[in-house]
Image 1: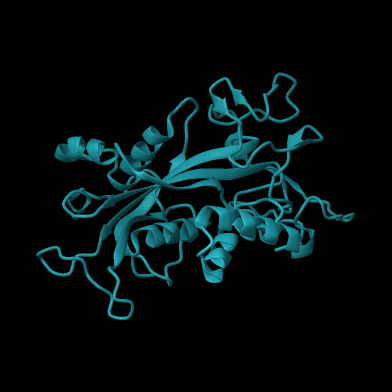
Image 2: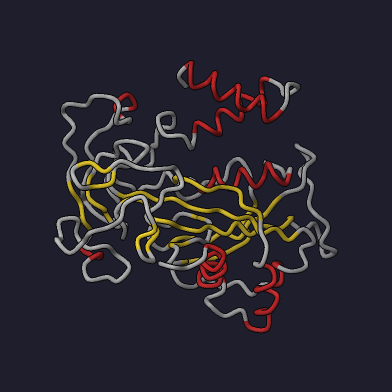
Length: 313
C-alpha cells in the first residue's frame, strides 16, 4: 500500500477504533480496506486466464499495470460478448445499439446502475471497471454494462457435537466450529455461497430469500415455509462492494451485498429440507475453516462471518 494512503487509512481507523488499538488490529483493518478500495486492491481472479465458458484468452495484465492510472501503451484486450446474452430480457442491449441510452451511475428505471464503490468513469462510451484492467472488453457473460448486482445469503449454524446439539469445539483453537450452507455450482464445480443476481426493482432482502430457496430447497420449503420466512426477516450485513469474480471485464463487473443469517441455537436451519435446485449440483452443510476453498471472493466474505461470530478458522 502506498505510504500516504496507508497513513490516511491508519489515522481514520485510529479515530474510529480509539487510541488503544494495537498495531496488529490497525494492520488487519488496513488490509481489509485494501481489498475494497480502488487503486489499492489488485483483483486477480479476472486476470491472466481464459474467460469462463469460452476459449477467449485475456490480454496479459501484470500487477504493475492493473490500475488505469498506470500507462500500458501495448494494452489491446479482446472484446467478448457471450451469445447467451442475445435476446435476453435480463441483459442490456449492445453498447452500440442506438436505442440504448442508459443513465450511468444512476437508478435507470428499475435497473440499478449505481456502484457501491462510487461513481465510475465512462470511457469511449463504456463504463470503466473501477478496480482496473482485466484483459478483456465487452460484457462476457454478464448481463449489465457496469455494475452487476448480486446478493449472497451466508446461512450458518454451529456444528453439532452429538445428538443433543451442543456446538463442537475445535481442540486446537478452543473455538466453536461454524458450518455454512454451501452449494456446488453447476457451471464450474466450485463450492459457493447460494447467492444470485438482484432482479430489476427487487429489494435485496427478497433476493437473499429467493436465491436461498431456489438453490438449496428447490423452491419448496414445504411445512417450513413460515419458519423460513421468519428466519430471513432479519440478518447482519457483512459486506457490500466489489467482487473479484472470474466473469469481470473492463466494462462489466460483479458487486454484492452479503448478509449473514445465523441460527445460534441450531433449532431452525438444521431442520430446513435441503435439496439442490436451480444452478446447484449439490448442497450441504460445510465446516468453515482456513482450508475451505470457495468460488470467487466467497472465502473472504465467509471469513468476515467467522470473525464476527468468533468461530474457529
